[in-house]
Amino acid sequence: MTATALDQKVKAPPAPAIEVQNIVKRYGTFEAVKGVSFSVADGEIFGLLGPNGAGKSTLIRMMTTLVPITSGKAIVAGHDVAIDPDDVRRMIGVIPQALTSDPDLTVEENLSIYAKLYSVGKAEREHNINDVLEAVDLVKWRGAQVKTLSGGMRRRVEIARGLVHNPQIFFLDEPTTGLDPVSRIAVWEMLDNLRKRRKLTMLLTTHYMEEADKLCDRIAIVDHGNLVALGTPIELKRSVPGANVVEVHFDRETPEWKARLEALDGVTSVQAESAGFYRVLTSSGSKTTMQLVELAASLGETLTSLSVQNTTLDDVFVHYTGRQLRDEQVKPPVFTLPPRPGAQP
Image (cartoon, rainbow, N blue to C red; front, side, top):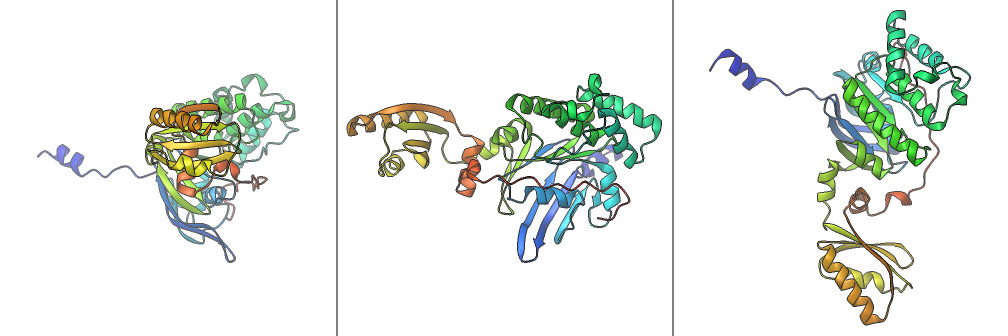
């Protein structure tokens, strides 16, 4: 065996961009994060999916040096968050839930101030500002006051600001909260393009199922501070018993419907969505549809709607947590500005 072949054989796999090892966060007796472990590969978009209050934002705040870790370890871009916080801060960009750019300054002024906080030199600063404004399609509005922009454009300003110092890893906490559906889709497309163009690693939190499904290479489902499932969107959907979902609505509600549906052949679970409306997971959508029609006819009941679809991340969340994500109460976002390099965590 040649030396080159031997080198290739023993070459270690690349280190992950982010590695979280049994990380815990306690506030007094309350444990917000309970021994979570995962890793994020270089160039990956990794999602933390769960309701507000599940521990997602706390995880990000520990990884970005905003709050100290109670126990466990977080390695970001090769640096231990607890030991080398300044090195971590130089390697990351952070987009918080809230819009925090100064509304009375222009887009360019906001970016320039942020770049100066990271000690980016004048020539590099001007180049970076031009580059990120082009990347987020805000070149025409560089001289506009931020308060004159729409919500979607202001979110793009936040993203540009987080990129102006050329980070390797990008943290986004609920990046599309408060945006209308059209603006949300535009942000998804922009983030995917930025990842490819700038070779960024991204970690984002979200409570939008579609956002996680569209954007993320892998997803970690977090609930009550625990990591309850981890995998690609396809892997997570395949892990749920039942290949199809049948949504059925009866014209009247009776207490027996749920038990009747659960007794059908091939049905793995039944979720009562509202009065008379049920979401049925089944191994055969066509077979269950026929059974439902026959059952309704035999009981003299009327089906007002019936549809078949594939398993979704909503079904995955229900399978692993026992409840629907949209049933969770949404709390107002809490934000603390990320410290600049040199500040104490």
